[in-house]
Amino acid sequence: MRRRFIWSVLCVLMLAIGIASAAGITEKEQLSGWVLDQAGEGVAGAQVLLLYSEDRFAAETDEAGYFHFQSVPKGLGVLVVRKAGYKLQQVEVEAGRQQEFKIILEPLPPEPGVLIGQILDAETGEGIWQVEVTAQPLRESVEFRAPRTFTGAKGYWRLSLPPGQYLITARHMKYQEHVEQVEVKSGEIISLAFKLVPKNLPPAFVHGRVESRGRLDARIGLPVPGARVVLTMDNQRSWETVTDDLGVFQFFGIPAGWGLLSVTKAGFKPWQEKVQLKAGETLELRVLLEPLPAREARIFGQVKDMKTGNPIAFARIQITGLEDYAEKARVVITDSRGYYNVVLPQGRYLLEAQHPEYFTKQELVDLKPGQQLQVNFLLRPAKQEPSVVVGVVYGAERRFSLIRDDSSIPTVPISGAEVTLSGEFGEYKTKTGQDGRFEFALVEPGRYMLLVRKEGYQTYQRMLTIPQGEKIELKISLLSKPITIH
Image 1: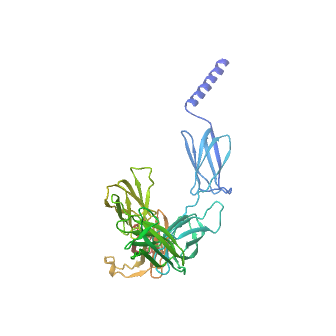
Image 2: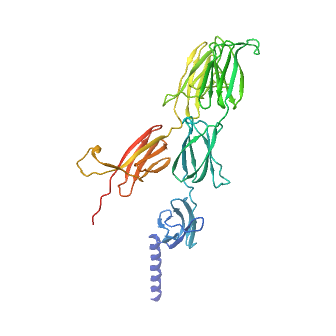
Image 3: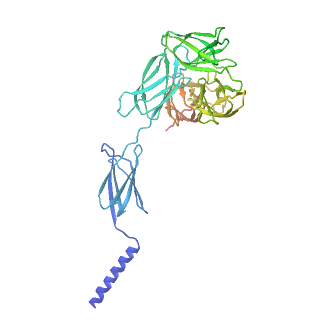
């Protein structure tokens, strides 16, 4: 009888174990740990996820960076830790093998700030081309190289920098150096406007003689009267003259710098050469023009800005022959009015107009003997010009709710209102003056959220689309917050 009882108990126990296994009942464990920064301090409010193949558990660290999971499956899992401002961390863990885990979070690099500006001539107010702008950090790092950029044709420049204190230096051979200290903040855009004072440099003198290259001896040449001579300097100012009866030309009072000298005459191949003029120097040149063969063709034209229609000086026209691939591509440079002129043998060519501030454009041409072919280029700007945003913020005293005409409503300028433009490039911030006016001198084109805040008034919010190269004027009315009577 006793044996039957023991056997019955064993059967019941085996059946219970089988049912428990079939129901998926497994051992449960606890898992806890700490989320720390690189200094060993606890990171509060970090999101901690514990992932298994079929289960998912979530927790959040307390003020000391501690987290805890109860009743988690025993076995391998993945611990995922997220926190704003830090890189995501994933760690493979096994509940039951280790009581507490330490997760070290690595901070994300700070969002860079943006400097945008324009450099002007202090005397003429015109933008200066090819000014070198460098940013030197006040706290130098071994791994950090001071970035630099150059201004475009109208003096605009832009630099993206990590947050910190910098010395911004503007250099140009014709102007006095300008240095300014700037603090760059994460995600903010700072607008700067420099005016450089010209150096008192003595001008240069350029003269020369234009001759026709001899057919048998290049050393012997005849004077070419009536040839058009154009000197274009790097500031895009140009001087033009015509050779006299002896083929002589001359230019007085030319500022120092790099320039392009171009000579054209009907019946001759066009000639051009890049020259460097030093202060007070006299530069003498001899120009040999080659007679134009009767069966050669000529390509000429002008390069312009697609948006403004203005000519583009110093654009490169690269000409590649498509029939003789061994021949090296030829390059000509446009003058101050965007014109170019080149003589080529008959054949098929690929013309490519290039400029650092514009997108490249290509044209395929088929030249016939003696053909005069005009090919003009309209280039799309690659660098968009910033705009100016100005406005006035005022409070409207709406005493009569039926009045709909704003002109009849008394207005009071609001000073000290915070004005913020937030866009994809960062944020512009300023405050209104005593007259309620504000200004953002240099705003890059794009879509922005405009926010205007002032204590005691309702926040003004509006989406703006800023085009390039324009002045935007705004008139903003802030409504007073309703007075709550208790």
